Image 1 (tube, rainbow, N blue to C red):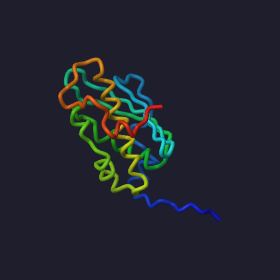
Image 2 (cartoon, helix red, strand yellow):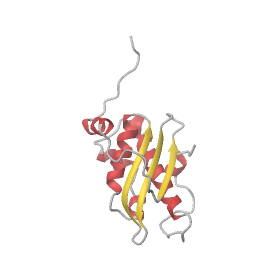
Image 3 (cartoon, rainbow, N blue to C red):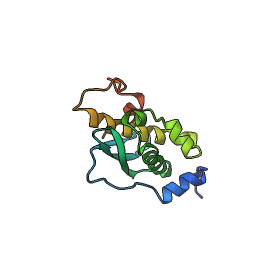
Length: 150
């Protein structure tokens, strides 16, 4: 008899877990970041293709070693940021990811936080050799700190 209690994921989370969008390494990425959660062992590699003139995200993809919520959060985030400027993408919160998924169980909020942290690390990496825009914090954000790079 198992003592595990299954989490009640909504259908959108389960659909993106079974059929994630934008899954896979992007060979021609302009920026990438690796992030992991010591809380649960999940890992995300996040990739961005960026228009250098407009600083707009053309494509995004991810690789994940994680649970259903981790995969779904990363997948929906790649869809949310397409066509957005780096500044607009930076403003996306884990709550927006959760809302886009129809909600996450409270014990899985960290999956949205991890996805945002990976995105922000990728954006910060891309901008590292450029003049820092005013909207980019000098210090790491809590989401970035949560996404401990391995």
